[in-house]
Image 1 (cartoon, rainbow, N blue to C red):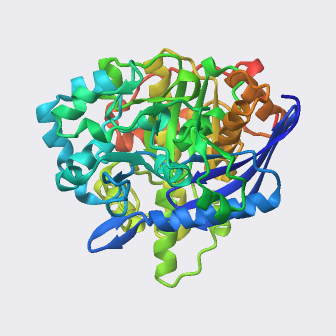
Image 2 (cartoon, rainbow, N blue to C red; image 1 turned 30 degrees about the vertical axis):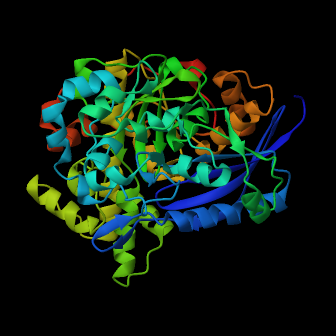
Length: 507
């Protein structure tokens, strides 16, 4: 195809969702946001739920606006991972999906590994042992499993309501801990051993395949033709975001998809299932075109947004840009905390948790919002450093440049600190990597000449400006900060290489 195609990209995050209109063709890659809406878990009866019907309503509203904004030749949906809805045998939803931040999975992992040891779980799934993995969520709700006929992850559930077609896309299925990462199929025997009925696991589909066309009632409400296809994209938002990372040489590059969560890793052709990778808690998730996202799920800007939310709830006026400017003037690395510890996972007063962590490690307690913000960003850059180094060492890669995409790419202070911490240049952008990856996969399915990931990424580079941050400061200062919270890592050599000129992209 030599023309330009138009698509609606539904891109759902844990704190907000949006519908974008994309236009893709030779030398053209454009996005326009037509609808944005807040998202977040709702606590009812002591349980944290997702308002999935409200999300669906907003998706339909966004599709109407997309139809009005220009031609929509297809629709694709990506979202956060692991959370799901259960359908009964009539196809009706059994209750609202529960958020992964709900404590119902507390202690479930410990029960499961008595049946299937961690080494066996990792050898099959290659997945990081997160307490909220889909497997643990399902095991925590045996009464619901008895009533359920099918499990659909969030983007697949929304696609089902749009098309009436049941299925699961590979990249998101790979995050469930019920997926065999080498066979690229459901791990049915594993599911049965832990008490998850295999009937719940729907047929798998590839990114770029057509799920179906809009149901007549949906087409009427959305103002689109009934022939409009819904195309499976990398439905895990990080899978779509990695498509949108403008790598020049992916073999020497790490990426950070920085948002509510931060996903830190490298792109590989085969999973890394070594004991060292398991002990480091690295995950092997499926990517578009059969690639592997070898990464670690790291706490992200969630901690900063929760701190701001707490201050705002207490009546303070919160100006994030002003806070970031003030934080840039705070002395660096005065106090750091390990944001990967469990206390920073649930909602709540992050300032108090930071104070407790600093007190426990004998560090100064931040005494102003600017100092709290600087502590969060220094700590996040330190976590990025730690995990980029581990990804490089475990995969046998040298890393001489780090790409930051997603919302964190517009946070100049965080990007500068990440370059300083990692000791290599950081290329920031694009911010909308997930939506770009979403529309690129759709465009290829519609016939645009984008034969592989390299062609998609070349189009991103040609059409989007990146901002380059050069490292400064002392590596010894970051080593000392790391030693305060992880003394066992003190003195460990860096596996990252000196920058290569061919990987230096001007900002």
